[in-house]
Length: 218
Image (tube, one colour):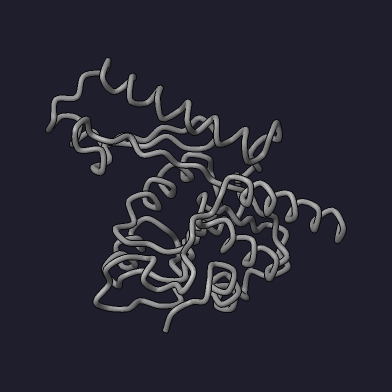
């Protein structure tokens, strides 16, 4: 069964997360851009605050799809030492890659939340949401980066993922919640009727709406 769109997927994903509703220690972090409409619906259902967790993979030169590390919200950097050694990546090359991706991360930070700082995650139960997982590399980088900020627990929550990816992420996260795990699995988009690209403007609007909702119910 396919999801109509990301908003419907988020409403369905919120159902198995019901135990986290109305808890003051819960924070929903969405991976932009596609994860934000999903995360918005999860946060609304759980009555939890919503923020974005930006992650930029550090790709191997010439094979950018292979992540040798990542940079994330809050100035966090994670590296894969074994891949750095295997491919002989010098510190100078690594810094060039990291600087480029950090600039893009900071641009998106400003576009999405303006001058507002990232929400504090220390000692929180953090639910990390995306619109789906294929290999899970971006989510894995997000979880590793988030660990460095001291959350009490990390819950990975997605509408759809292949069974193998769901199982591999259980080694990184405290809990993995996935509505559907179809097999065979080709791509996330095949499980949505509407998988049109989420714009920067939509991300900003949803974050703003989530903030206004929290203020109105405080």
